[in-house]
Image (cartoon, rainbow, N blue to C red; front, side):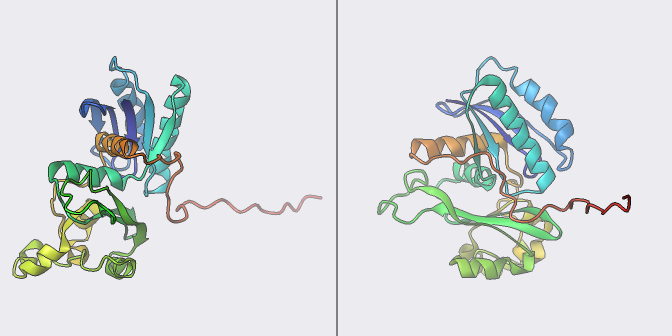
Length: 258
């Protein structure tokens, strides 16, 4: 299957992926988190110039800021309508978790945290789901996927939310140097990926590995393909905002004219 994928939950990203071979046929990643509109149109045009025709459009549905997120979803729906192909959505954090899964097979629970602005973070936990076959070591056969979330909270409150969800110990406040003295704590914390850790290392811990910060559309497509092979139905392209948009509607003023 050829998937054309878009994600604008953090930095914008577009990709065309052959999911049978795992080959990324074309992709582009923005280096600015706030210029989604300027990036997405030209990037889509260049990626879709590839001769391979997509069978499916996939959009990252967040969580993410209101304006940026809807740019990618609207663009994906437009491409699907123009080409007469289905459009589905997938949580954007799945792209980050998939990138880690492919680079470090067998990774345990993974905490993903993104910038939610307002001095908050969006966060989720990914890993091998319960009920996996005993002794399974491959993440795909063990049913790697979303375990908890997505949530939104102040960085200082992330640990409490995770404790309540049954995932205590994933947050490791302090820098890598401070944690190095306590190897048990480092081991207990597991992987921490996403821009949220880069922004709030004193409250959440340093990102580990530090190279996986924003969702990439190619990994979103590969995560979706793995779900489809496992018989998991993809979501509709409906945004996962988790909170009200920053912009508010202008109140309607009563007219004094009779």
